[in-house]
Amino acid sequence: MNLLTKTSLLITTVALFILMIGGVIFFEITKSLINKQVDKELISEMHHVIRSFDQLATGNDTMHYDKITIIPTGEQVTFTPVFKDTIRYNDFEGIFHTYRVLLFGYNPGKGNYRVEIYKSLIDSNILIERVTLVWIGLSVVLIITIYFLNKLIFKRTWKDFFEILHLAESYDI
Image 1 (tube, rainbow, N blue to C red):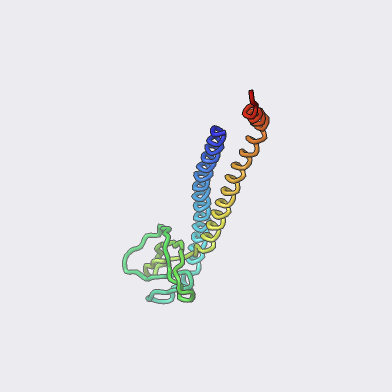
Image 2: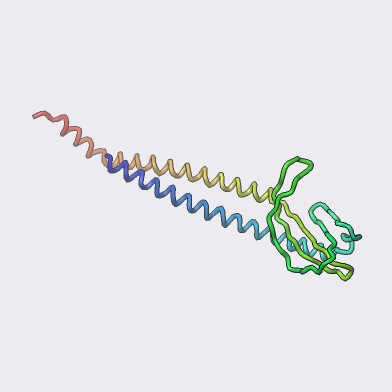
């Protein structure tokens, strides 16, 4: 019976490691897909800002909109967009939130501007957190199920053998 217990534990341990590795891979793929989607939304917003730049940039001061910051700069700026992750303080809630930010330069002919467009990652973080919790829950259920199924199968398979052993032990010569 000791060999069967070791076999059952070995199967459960291997399944646990496979689930852990699969969970990490699944988490990274999900995070990457969400970041790609957020980046696409930021690029779309960048094109919208460029199309409506004359209405947004009204002076030589830094302009702050809900999720867009336009900063006039004296130096030459490049148009190459750069994605970064950052945090910003939310005055209303009094806590920090994670954001994905797109930074790019723009020169509409009347000066150089650095534009920052922010996209909140709260919804995507909640999604990743919930998917991870579901993955962990399913992994625990699967491990428990494998353990008890192995125990049940081994009991049924070796039932006759152990009955014969018990009879042999109780046999008195």
